[in-house]
Image (cartoon, rainbow, N blue to C red; front, side, top):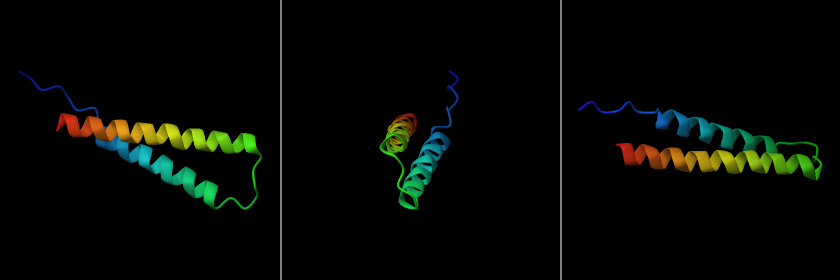
Length: 64
């Protein structure tokens, strides 16, 4: 039986981690305080990227 190809879960996890680090860095180094609406978008992006990171790592562990 042929094993199904991997979906590159490690690459997806690395990409999600990069997005999380990038967004947190952007929020930490912002010199001008953004309006509250813009802040929620950054938190939403970080939250979604963290969920993607956890899901990718779980999938990577399960497939290996």
